Every structure is written in C-alpha cells, then in structure tokens.
Length: 368
Ligand code: CP3
Image 1 (tube, protein in one colour):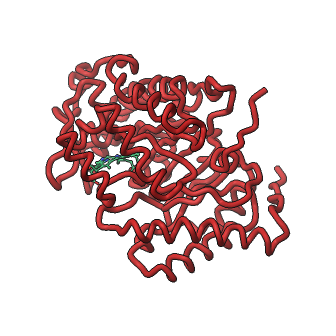
Image 2 (cartoon, rainbow, N blue to C red):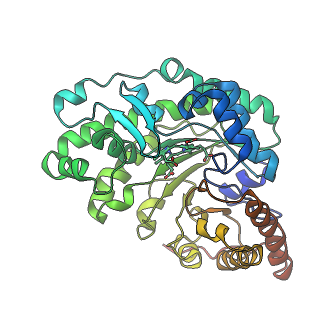
C-alpha cells in the first residue's frame, strides 16, 4: 500500500486536497539569480556546473530557500542524456546547445552507446543524493528528463532548430529509422529516471518541449508513443514507499488532452495557450494540471502579477489537483522580486479562494 504524501506539492500531483495551491517554477534556478551567476562562474561554465554535485546541489537549493518554493527541481539539463549516449555536448555563447556529430543515417545511429546511468550519469545521481540530504524531507525533489522526441530533435539537428528540417525529413522519409532512435532513447530515459527515483527524487517530469511542432497524427506516433514506452517501464514507488507522480510537460500542444491522459501520467503540464478552466473540465479529475501562467507576466507590475495569478486560480477553481507554475521557464532578464510577488500571490489568493468556497470541492467526474 503506497503511503499518502504530506507535502502540498506531492498531494496536488495526486489530486489530494491541500491547504493552499503549491507553486514551483520551471527554470527556477538560473541566470536571473545573481547567486546562480556567482556559482556558475566558480564552476567555469554551465556544463561543469551540472557535473559538480556540490555546486549543482547549491544552485538547486538557491530558489527553494530564496522563495520558499513547494518543490525543488534537480539542477541539470535534458541534454546530458545524448552526451551519455556518446555525443559531444557544448553550449556555445548565445547560440544554445551543440551536439556533435549529428545523427542522420543508420550508421550514425550505430555510434550510440548503451548507457548505465550509474556510470555515465553518476554525477547526476550523486547530486540527487546530496540534494535529498540537504533538503531533509522539508521540500520534495523533482527529477526530470527530456522526452525521446525532444531529445531526438537536438541529436538529429545537431542543436536547436527553428524549422526541424532534418528530424522531420527523417520522420517522413525514414520513419523506421526515427522509430529505432526514439526507442533507443526511451529505454535510456526509462533507466535514467528509474535510477533518479532509486536515488530519491520524489516526482519526475518529462519535458516534451518540441512535440508541439508535429501534426496531431505524428505527435501521437512519434512523441506520445515513445513517452508511453518510458511510463510503462517506470518504477512508480520510491524507496520510501511513496508513489512517484509522473508529470508530462507539453509546449504548444494543449489540444490532445485525452491522448495525454491515456499515457497514465499523474500530472499534465500546460503552456499558457491552453485555457485552464476548459482543460480542467475536460480532464475531469483523471489527472492533475500544472501551469500555466505566461512567463511574460513577470515583466509586469506586482499588481498585474497578482491579478493574473488570481484569474488563473479562479479558472482552475477550488478543486484538488492544481500545481501552480509558469507555462514555460523563467528567462534570464526577469526580476527575482517579481517571483516573490508571484509566490506570495499564489499563497494568499488560493487560501482566499478556498475560504470563499467553503474549502476544496470535489471535481465532477466524467461518466464513461
Ligand atoms: O528548471 C530548473 O531549474 C532545472 C534545470 C533545467 C535546465 N534545463 C537548466 C538550464 C531544466 C529542467 C532544463 C530543461 C531543458 N533543457 C529543456 C526542456 C525545458 C524547456 O526549456 O523547454 C530544454 C529544451 C533544454 C535544452 C537547453 N538547455 C537549451 C536549449 C539551453 C540554452 C538556452 C538558454 O536558456 O541559454 C540550455 C541551457 C540551460 N539549461 C541553462 C539552464 C539554467 C542556461 C545555462 C547557463 O547558465 O548559461
């Protein structure tokens, strides 16, 4: 029998009632924080920071302590997985990530190596252990990975892309080759997430940042199915006996909620282009929802931030199963002061909403 969680964030992931809406922010650790910039400089560069468990632990904790977040997210990057598979990873100044040599042919794929997470990604697992020790049960820790499709875009394009020319070329011209690549990545990701869980992460988030560039049919065949392959293999009870919720984050793809629920995930993370009220009605208690404030709201005044937060909380309503977050990550030119305003607004406004409604209500479940 899994143990019922006490942390607000984990309770909300399992759609259990909470006293106030839990909040954390994607990319909550990063360049908008001066204390992050200091540690990154100490490490030399971003990738060395990811590979130094002491420093990666330190930057993971920075936003948790500064803003009293309801969850910590492991400091790392989705692209350490292709690196572990044998590609060379670098982050060029201002140009984003580069993965070399790119994968385009069957013989390119044969260069990929099998991954033992404890070996090639041991530094990440060590960081997980250290973060859990530092957090001391006070705040739950989220582990993560990229989705196979999202990782494959970087591996085939050789880095970021605007047109996705090569991966889409492979999708239409050589679908079996792409499928083989996605399966291979999915198996590595499943082992990697299971290793993160074994080392103590209490929730996992799969980032499908680029699923939204696909048409609906291709999205199901190439992105969602490979995510399903991972979920089917995940060890969903952690070493402490608690169920580990699975969060799927989708960017620019709110129109396929039924298919997303069908994967058996616990939480669906939405970008800001989906109406939260509509999504909640459609999902009808079958999954929790995470999101989905437009990050650009953080460029506005504290009053506007509060107004936008209140609207979003009202859109969701006084029901269980909401994790407050942005619809995408923090940007480097954002003001940490606005994050203070946002977190305070989420807490005060969600308590008020519950008070006005006589506590949490049950969501009307959909009849089959
Ligand atoms: O959220 C967190 O605080 C945890 C850490 C985290 C990072 N990247 C740190 C990071 C997480 C969860 C990611 C996920 C990630 N990485 C995604 C999926 C989510 C999304 O943003 O859509 C993707 C696509 C990547 C790949 C990646 N990493 C890119 C394209 C870039 C360059 C863009 C940029 O912002 O410069 C990165 C670098 C990166 N990953 C930084 C951080 C803090 C900036 C590195 C720096 O310090 O210069």
